[in-house]
Amino acid sequence: MFLGVVKVICSKALSEDIFEVRVERPKELAHIQPGQFFMLTANAYLLKRPISVSDFTSTQIVFTIREVGEGTKSLIDLPEIQIMGPLGHGFEVTKAHNVLLIGGGIGVAPLLPIAKKCKENQSKIYSTLGFRGEPVMEEVFDSISDFLGIVSETSNKYENGYVTSLADLVLRLNEIEMIYACGPKKMMAEVAKLSEKYEVPAQLLLEEKMACGIGACLGCTCKTKEGAFGFKHSKVCKDGPMFWASEVIFDV
Amino acid sequence: MSNLKKTMEVDLNGLTLKNPIITASGTYGFGREYAELIDLNELGGIAVKGLTKEERKGNEGRRLVETPMGLINSVGLQNPGVKSFIENEIPFLRQFDLKIIANINGNTIEEYCEMARILDQEDVDSIELNISCPNVKNGGLAFGTDSEMVARVVTCVRAATGKHLIVKLSPNVTDIKPIALAAEKSGADCLSLVNTFSGMAIDIHNRKPFLKRGIGGVSGPAIKPMALKMTYDAVKSVNIPVIGMGGISTYEDAIEFILAGAHAVAIGTANFYNPEAPLTIKKGIESYMNQYNIQDINELIGNLDT
Image (cartoon, rainbow over all chains, first blue to last red; front, side, top):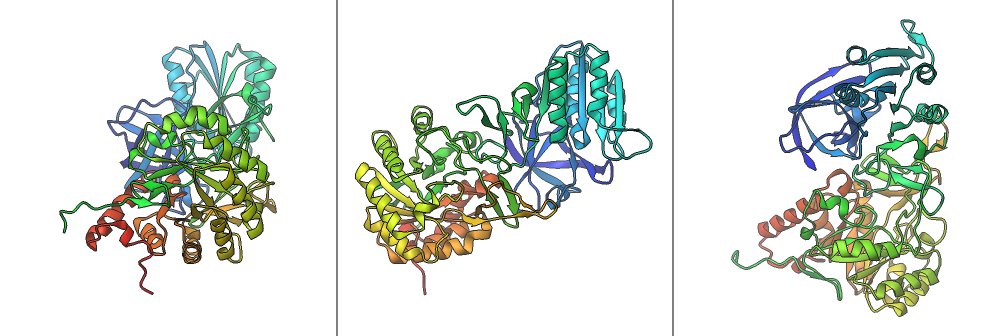
């Protein structure tokens, strides 16, 4: 695992509260799996911030970050940054003919690497992305998707509504074989229902508050269907962040 | 003088550590996660994740709240149970040159004793009796805040095991001295303190506490001055060694605890935001010893000019 300081190549705003940080990829860094994340050292309070990889090449890693407080805010405009990773179990790559991406808000960012991987594998990509306001990363998803649908809760430039309604429609009309999703908890619970309804496996990239990011603090657990108690608290950082929709218990 | 080999070895009344750096229970799992990042052979000891007799699923809902220079947790002793620890974790940890400290928790005095009896037969170097966890309904803190209860549980566990016995104390008391004394009189070989301070944080938009149980345990640099003072108080009231902890994140913090009288220090929350903390703290202590021409760390313990 890599733990060290890397140079920031550029840092730019994508919207009012979402920004992109592009860093140099250290040579000794292990293979990155789509859906994996890094712990980024913030210059506020104490803890590092878990941030998914939203793109990578052999020389660069991109983090797309939503500013939610002082911690994430402190990650903007740094000349260099300490990173630790790659961490967790990411998405399982499939050779499915038709894959559906469901992204909500900042959750669209970690879907890009798996979309690229699916494209390499000749899959047809249906992307459904939902935002509260104006979208981000529209162009890049447009270029990689065979179908792109964007909804917004407030913007009058886009159809208003929830992304899961759009995803429902896509699932009804197409022979989707695999779903990849990332977004707010409520959206993820809806995706799990869609996965069950259409009998299409779904890989969910979950998010939780983390202290260590490596499985030691047990702060970031989610409920999964297994173990001695009929359910288990699995570690989002280490057992996930990818979980199959069929194994997660949602308390929403 | 400088040719003489410096020693960092400390004796905790029957448990010898090659250096005074321990990783605190609940912040280091069973060492596996950190073994990918640092050389565990550098540690004096590891206090493993709090164990219970049976597997424990831990608390539901949100478990962490970050506060200025601190962290509130409500994990609730999630652990695989003592049997799994014996089968899977002891062999792993034995690959390294460090002392294994098994942290044990019970709902009842009998459960504490049963765990001590089980571990007495196993390859652990010390047992740390956790009578100070604020995040469970029964046991934990309830045993650690009353001198009579402390005496009862420690006496009972002492009878159940010949292993080196550390009693981990809670800071959630008016006066640590009678508690420390009760633990010593009842057969503790060593004390460790502090566990977390009870604390809370409220989500003002939902008008609810962030943590489902309302309260959690506060750790991190925010608690260091209070932890240091309580360590100092405990050291003055007993004749057994004390392991100091609470917000230690730099070597200067560690030296403060040692000067206050701690024989060893435990690094906790700092591991989360700086996995290299135990190593940099150890190196820092070494350079401090060089700076002041100190050959043996024992010269520093309690060497406070007051």
